[in-house]
Image (cartoon, rainbow, N blue to C red; front, side, top):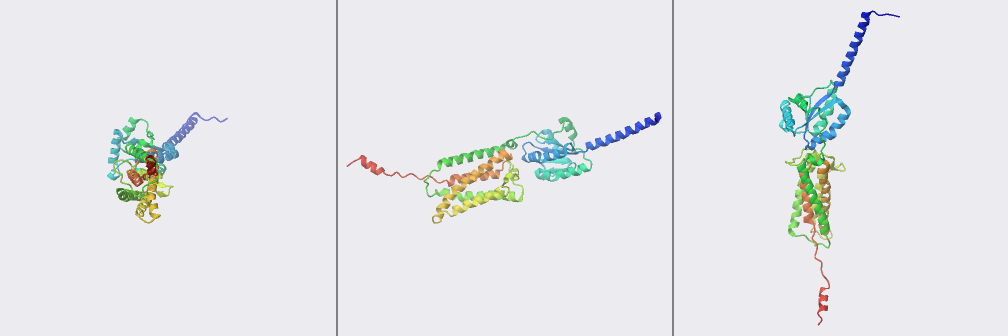
Length: 350
């Protein structure tokens, strides 16, 4: 049996302990490699929910703890203060200010288009380079300490609550259209008068032309991918960027609207042609307006209850097609009472 000297045995254990320590340090460093980012969001922002609900979950599932994203609610005073610090630190220009905004190292990604297009590549590059730290936003570390554990997801909201004001207008218009369809079905009883009142005849092409203008703008936005001018209420871009902006995933809804309004305008122009064309054209106008209103009910329902955003241009088109439904609705012709003279004669014999 070989007996090692006491000092040599001690040196061997010391060397073994040093090797284990080095392996442990490397293992710890490998576990700590992570990509860090800060996402500024607002609970009422539909674009933010696109990023949070659709973009981040697959990335979080893929990278696990290697992807650390801190959620900061910019609608809160402390979150807004932190966002303003980020604006100053990274010199974010006025046209790029807004949420969702993701700060990744020295990069600032803005919007539901830029974030999904650039974030996956940045994660791969950062992890390959050994990870990164939290962005150098003044006040971020105290904010994290005050908040406790960093949140990776905001409180879930129903689609309607993402834009209560705009979606409330959509629900109001939805009820008006449903009520109009029901009222028209109850009221429309043949036989009908062959002609409309003069003011109705003049109003139909005006409304159709306005409808063409609105639908053409929406078609332009949908086909070119441009940002829509939405105004202070609603979020037209979220609606136009949703999967529901195209019929069967092919035909943009705006283009379909242009076709529908042009068809109504053509039918109006053919109303005075000889029979049977003229009569068929007159009958086609209320039928097309009715079908258009039904389709608008479907689209308007999607905005507050599925998409979570309302497009004011879409509501304008809904108002136009509903007005056309009422204006083009033919009046019921008075029934002719036959045999009345004979009955009177029998009651008063000569």
